[in-house]
Image (cartoon, rainbow, N blue to C red; front, side, top):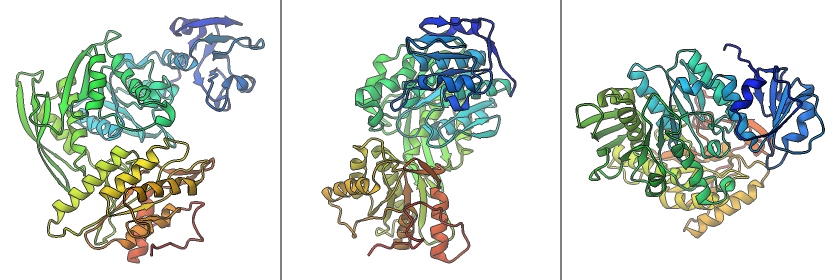
Length: 545
């Protein structure tokens, strides 16, 4: 990547709500923006952020020692510093603009599409990426899985939501500099609330759904919805080459009713579950199988001469709920970028499995094994419904085929969710195995006890319809040993993630590797070793009674 630098006096006019500047040296040049004093390199601006557990202003001396040339912060009455201190009202907002200014506002040179929602963001963004490629457009993408720039995949780290604003701007600059014309960003509620995309001008905004999630951070449902709404409320605020457009899910009434009146630009509604509604885009037929989806879709009032068109769409993605993600992506392409439906359908067909999303794992076992990222009540319900439909359509003569679900609930996160998810699984799965999922500094036993209480309250019977196995590797082993021919074993909640957090330590972990290891042990065939977790009991698998 080319090197960027900017004078301080060129930055100041771009910073929102500057309160004061001390030690001003306008000819100072900065070449990076850092929010962690330990990562400051010579020439960087250090941004001191006030967090929930620490205050970045306490680390200013360390940042200066590491080579910071200026500091942005919000604290008053700091001791005099040997470098300029720019006091602002909102350091996170200022950080986003400082990074955007450094890289010469890359989003202004790109057609930028934001995808938000509780579930389905990564899948929708990835489908859209393949559609743009099929249309001959040079596209880049930033998701919670990775950044994809001109075909090169860049890891964005552990448990990442939207990357921090300096990374977002750097990725966008890399896209622009490498010839990318269209950028797709998966935008989380954390990313919106924490101003990580504040300096990004979006042309198109897409919502998948808004359901129960992240109330540990947002505190209230209203605040969570308001965070999502920021993506749409900012559409059209700056002049763009592309007419701004909002893509809304009519069949997700909570998000539709909240967002629709707040949007001042053109709106397109898609209705994946209601073919009779006069939405712009609908689905009239769905067929699901282990080989993917077959869909009949209809698009009305298209921006090209064909006002209405029905089209058959085939996708290798598994799970009926992915039909909504496909419809959302196609709507953005057709109505926002005037891509023809048949071109969009061809792009959908080329989007294979998405890392850790309804991903089938097979070593020749006589049952299905699958890994998915579902970690919210809504996503879990849809995943289990899709699993049930897959079994039914695969072998309608085997009504006894069972869904065996393995999942946990993260520590230091939304506690209400850990009660809601067992209730969903008891209703929709035949066997539930409760296990670890990033307990962090919380007691794993307490988390599992809370989940078990809710399972029992919803009719679950311990050691019959649900089991508790704290070690996730042993839980997956239990599931595959319980499976009968035709069943489906489902490891949920981790998906693509590559680590699991116990206390403050990240242990290497991949559900797909764990599933392959358990299957290899069961079948007595070569396979990977089961990844180690601190809950492992001397490597001895625990099988339910």
